[in-house]
Amino acid sequence: MMPVRTTIPYNQGLYFITFTCYNWLPLLAQTDGYDLVYKWFDYLQTQNHSIVGYVIMPNHIHALIDFSESSKKLNTVVGDGKRFMAYEIIRRLKDRRETETLTLLEKVVSSKDRANGHRHEVWKDSFDWKYCKTEEFAYQKLSYIHNNPCKGKWNLAEDITKYEHSSARYYITGKHAGYRVRDVEVVIKKLIERKEE
Image 1 (cartoon, helix red, strand yellow):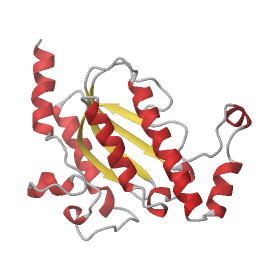
Image 2: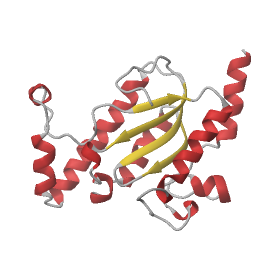
Image 3: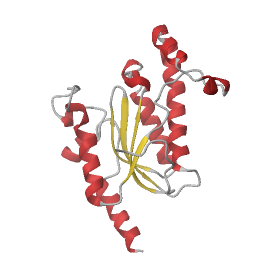
């Protein structure tokens, strides 16, 4: 079980991050919002954070992110990304006249959030995180991320290297798919060096 609604206690490090669309609705697929996640990744890179692995599913995102030292709390960094993507998803739903979905996302906003100017509920409130302290754990999470599109009900590709919105292709063939990642080996080496300091 991953911690939920808890503050990440460190301001740097390698983390497995997951966030999910409200009620597991396929909002990323419905709005073709994969590029919004890539834009968030781009922004993270401008802040010296690194994307090590990822998969963007129709209704949730898993990412392995190496956060460099930050003055912002990591919860804020992730929260800001979710907010940016939420605005864009709502804009696209409006452009596509997806009134049924918009009405649903509007109805479920709590009165407290509504009072704070919140109009639609795009994501589950919290996000899940796991701190990757060891090489073994980082590889375990990377494997979990990469297998996501081909397990359970999904069947989004015939094999994991064929799914466009995942770093699996890079780790298996050396060729990047939707987004260029930083190799986990480089990050692990840094992790080991940090421990030795």
